[in-house]
Length: 191
Image 1 (tube, rainbow, N blue to C red):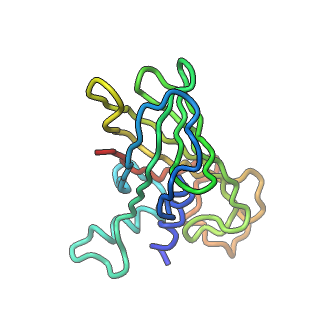
Image 2 (tube, rainbow, N blue to C red):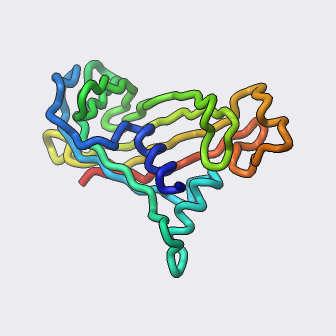
């Protein structure tokens, strides 16, 4: 069950759960290159209790049965439409370009935002908001981009004024603290 939730979060983060089909159209802007991005959950930077249990179970000695360090992978084209802007175009069916900002080859993309009114996260069944971002630095050797080093971050916070949080029957141990948030962090790279 915990693995399924971890995989579901990685799927949400970038829709990286289906194999990449051929690109559906050109990535708007001056194409800088296409990379295969990969990442693994990062325990020191992750603060969400339900996600930490998954990582810690996989790294225990001996590992907890049924656990694995959550990973994600996807292929995408990077393009620069204008000065100071970047598009990340996932190589999957019906994917829309993700637009962001850049300073040179340092990129920042707000990937997605979702309100989970019914499902919550981990054992928290109360509504939460999830805001994701993807940022880092592209590397190149005189021409097209050849690599990437950065992070994929999901910040999870309580939905304001949700009555669920006042219900004594609810298990709130995995819920973000009142007025606070928790993070799920992936360290990302491309070759």
